[in-house]
Length: 596
Ligand code: ADP
Ligand code: MG
Image (cartoon, rainbow, N blue to C red):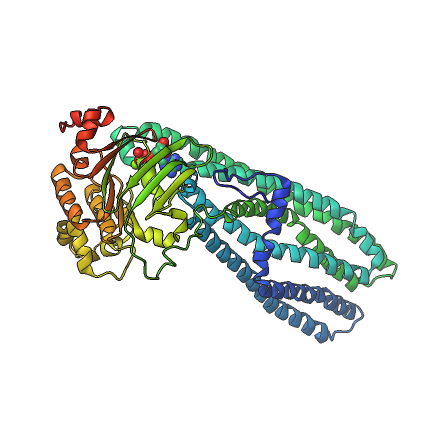
């Protein structure tokens, strides 16, 4: 298997070898549940044998009747017993194989979730949530159906063919040979039919996908499009997709009806051959009428599953593609490896961290093929220092912060915390020492309290309220009907943008981490509230290292040092006065904002 390296795109490569491999690689996952699989394979064999005994009893009964003997209790009891027993055996076999399949799906889903959780910013920059959802839901579903329905089809096909032919040769060998010629025709037709039905079904799925996509896009951006009065345009585009879906669906219906209607006619050819030749055998006295009837039953038994051979092939092909898409993710290495020992496991008492940070010629990019988001940055930050980070949009401010808790690893150079390189820290200890409040103020659909104290659900309420106080969020909390127990909706939509920012700021402050990183956390509040927040922040963070991104030079002035990033480069560092004297981006900004 090719092992996808960091930055390589993980779109499937449709080479035949890889596809074969991914099906084989499913085997260990299935083997974990081999008890259930084994039971169902045995039970299906038993069921076929029970089923195959029925025509023999039938033949016996017919021949008894033909001989004028009306006592057919024996064969009738035999049939009844076989049918009843088969009922139990088949249903337990089906449950067993489905149990195995749903367990395989469960394991795969868990492994996938685990793998995805370990990816970093670079991965999530390359993959959409939609793509990951498809893999988790639809690809795993395809694999599950392959394991359950696919296995059922396969064992029925194998068992029915062997047992059916064995019985036919037992009853009338010379007649059995006559059944062979039509079989390849039926099999080939079944494959052809399955292929055209699959093509039609894929076209339907694709057009349905467009319909969903259009709808999602429309309702996701409903406010924008209504504000711009784009409804007629959007409606026309939706109608187009909707039309295409209808057409594809009708085409699929036509193909399916035709293909399935032709199949019985092909099967009838086999029946006619047996009837002609078998009838002659009966007339010549070489075969009893009862045995001829039984023979027909076995012909049906062999032909019936052959009709679904095409469906089986389709399932295997789809399963192969889906399995490969799953292994693409499962094969990913951890984007951020966790080999470091300093700070110990999560849970153990963390040693004190002073909060000295250093960047040594650091270069960072999101994926090997992308341009550097940060180039050759060297910066030393003393414990307890407060740093304001400024610069135009896209300059690399968020990237600089993301490097510290190792949401992203640098491409070149080195970062240290307390003179220890970041990879030498255990990931848990590092991330406990460095609290990051990201730019997008995300709230989980949960209680406000659980959101504010997300790292520690057991934290005392008083501590949370203190942090809220420092973040100028206390008043908002007090005014909420249920205080900290108030549920904030999906993505926290019940709070305003400014309130959300102060909520996430509280979440960062409450941790009292040795290092706090604030990514543009005051953008959505007014200047008065911002001043209030800064007062609270400086008090709460006294003596602790704090880095914050801001766009206001009035805010930046209150830091010990201001650093300016432009296009991934550190272009200035120093106090407000020093940067003003230097001229350049900061001086121009300060002048515009009236702080020069
Ligand atoms: P800033 O925070 O200063 O606005 P960023 O650090 O977010 O800038 O971005 C720096 C550069 O890195 C930009 O060119 C941006 O497009 C790119 N970038 C940021 N995040 C990602 C990501 N997750 N995946 C790919 N590229 C990214
Ligand atoms: Mg940013």
